[in-house]
Image 1 (tube, helix red, strand yellow):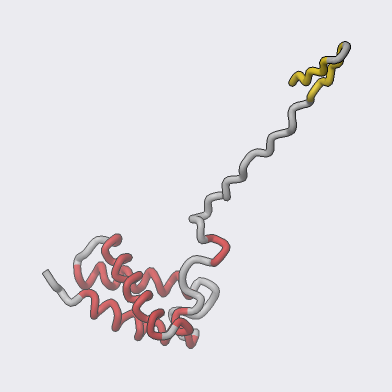
Image 2 (image 1 turned 90 degrees about the horizontal axis):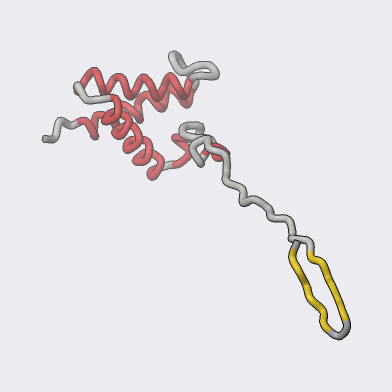
Amino acid sequence: MDKGIRQYARQLFATENELRRRGLDPYAGPKGNAVFRKRIIYTLVENFGCTVNAACTHYAEAKNFLEDLNAELVSGLGRAPDKNNGGRKKKVAPTVAPTPELLLSWGNTVGIYEM
């Protein structure tokens, strides 16, 4: 069932994004981008009665749509480049120390034995 939420989300995102880019209220200050995201999502929840997860999906779709048109319009939104792995530490392969070897010789035979 089409309720028009996608088109509404795109329009709301574009309108509010212009206020955010200019640094106008309520998006002024260091938490402006977080306030922007929450405001878009909860406006969609209130107006369409959808879940927060569904509203987040429409927010992401609207952001990607606007980013495809002009990436400069959404600069500053989204995850920081150094956080692209979800905040998890990168896996590092353990380094294995070489096994010491003992060289034994007796007569004409030489044997290498691992310790």
